[in-house]
Image (cartoon, rainbow, N blue to C red):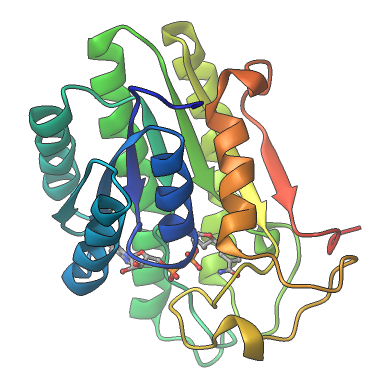
Length: 244
Ligand SMILES: NC(=O)c1ccc[n+]([C@@H]2O[C@H](COP(=O)([O-])OP(=O)(O)OC[C@H]3O[C@@H](n4cnc5c(N)ncnc54)[C@H](O)[C@@H]3O)[C@@H](O)[C@H]2O)c1
């Protein structure tokens, strides 16, 4: 098992990508701490992981509130002793052009998708530095960071910010043996926010099939394992060739 004895915090673990990561990491021996705003989702995934024989817990909170994030890290350490891995999956998206997008919506999407990822990264890194045993952090950007959209702008700006944040965090955390990378998915599973299920999404990639959360989880596993030890500060496109 590749993650035996490791403790993984999965932010946004209540559905889709975070849920897929939680299942694969459980099979690989990790203890899972899910952090999500939605209690129904978080508790249902946690129960499923326990039924599979895993050790799992959840904390409910909002990634935009540093106090919630800090309390979640403390609760994880209290339950499992340490934090070795952070998968930073929570995000929300706008779905309008800039003429129709309310200013408050611009701020809200940036707040959850960029600042929320920052707070989770920061408080996990503080804990990892305290432990002195290193760690691995995977942020989630998006193909949207690299391509313009007619019906999104705040989400795309946030995802571009995650690419830059990942680089600077890598520069600042590598001295503590904490590796930071990001993934830029194409389309994976259901839509962010969940309004369109996987089988109804129109996708364009070279494989001709939708990337599913279990496919994404394998790449995240690689990025948190020692096999990727020399990949640092990068944002990896995982889009079944869509960007090619
Ligand atoms: N699904 C895709 O096609 C796709 C494409 C490109 C990038 N991504 C990125 O991959 C990551 C995972 O995407 P997904 O499709 O699994 O997202 P999702 O919307 O299915 O799940 C996100 C989870 O985050 C939680 N969440 C939302 N706001 C929160 C908050 N303020 N505090 C705490 N939890 C909160 C939600 O309750 C949900 O369980 C995201 O960063 C997303 O932007 C996804």
